[in-house]
Length: 177
Image 1 (cartoon, rainbow, N blue to C red):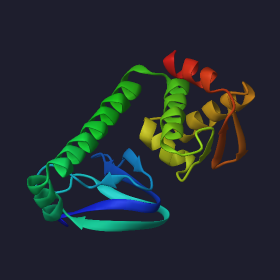
Image 2 (tube, one colour):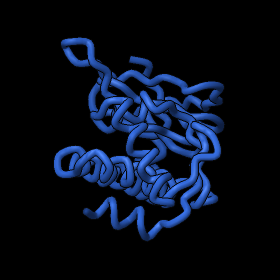
Image 3 (tube, helix red, strand yellow):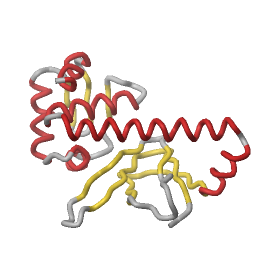
Image 4 (cartoon, rainbow, N blue to C red):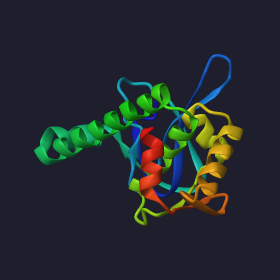
């Protein structure tokens, strides 16, 4: 256990776990400004991998604990961050359990769009295979969903890693279906 928490400043990080049969499950993607690595107990249960060139800042867990004990605003900020992460995990579980393939991809794009500054243009740091492993789909299914959304003029794909949201309302309707 490293005893450290990471903060992404540039690039992206994915947290993963492998199943007993070797399949990869991506639990989350972290973008600049996101904090990750805070887990219960003394051992990390997930692995973290940089997606491309990434700059991180490492913070000792003990410093976070001390700040939370000594400063009420730090404690509240920590609680708020953990509440958001729990809410995101719950929403992700609902997406995986209740939505079809197209709905999952639409929900993923909407969630990512809400995290980036230019909400109608998304530079994807992750591959289609990463998205598939995050959404419990095959890469072919993810690619078909992107192609269908492009055909429907809901999104544009100027390149494989750049998505332009052309019709957010249509994307929201697809996600809600």
